[in-house]
Amino acid sequence: MAKRLLEKRNITSEQALKVLRKNGIDVNEDQAKIILDFLYILAKLTLNQYFTKY
Image (tube, rainbow, N blue to C red; front, top):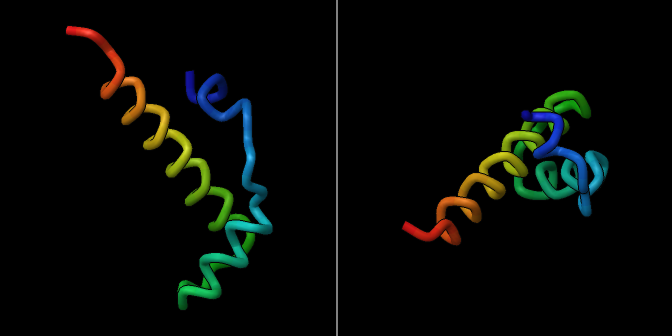
């Protein structure tokens, strides 16, 4: 399931790393990938919940 949520990416891990470092968060590339994965999953779940009809 998680693999399906992570298929399409518009932001690379390098871009995420640059933004995180710019905002004072010192992480390595592997940590930036994990953070980016989490944010994509969170965004997907939020959109699904918001647009699901009850």
